Amino acid sequence: MPYGDAMNARVRSAERRAEIVRAALEVIAERGYRGASLAAVAERVGLTQQGLLHYFPTKEALLVAVLEERDQWDAVPATQWRVDLLAALVEYNAMRPGIIQTFSALLGESVTEGHPAREYFTDRYRRVRENMAGVLRAEYGERLPSGLTPERAAPLLVAVMDGLQYQWLLDPESVDMPGAFRDFLALLGERA
Image 1 (cartoon, helix red, strand yellow):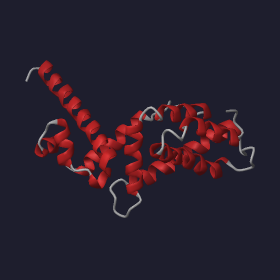
Image 2 (image 1 turned 90 degrees about the vertical axis):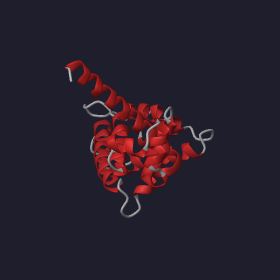
Image 3 (image 1 turned 180 degrees about the vertical axis):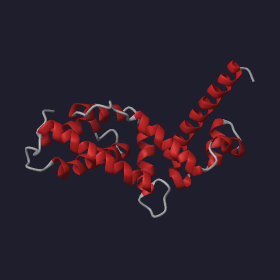
Image 4 (image 1 turned 180 degrees about the horizontal axis):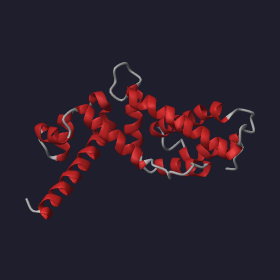
């Protein structure tokens, strides 16, 4: 196969994989991971289930791709996060209800024993708490105005971010997710 044809085939394969991941995001958002089937994802992208298995040999492999894709969307600069960047991330998330719904569905299901995303979320939350402690330390030093250490306040910060997402998904007209997060930052000593 000539070089140009091989490149085109790789590009088409990458585009098809991305299309499958987007479809999986939608199906998981609608049905949850346990309710989502490879057949439903395949149907959404116009493939047979066997055709989908060419790209993702198992449902777990597709789940990993979905989680990796979601993490890329929330990527922040490699430099230290800042509190204002967190507020911007919450505001950005308010424009992506499907992604938030998928993440929330997977997170909720992952607390059950044997769920394939449990290890992913356990590790992710450990890293997120460490990162949030770093954000708080950079902003406030070793003690927040309340007297808490950054490590003690970090789980609270993460809980507020995720809890607001659930409330917003359930009642977006009543919950101003970005505004409520800015209010929380004001409680930490940050100006809204």
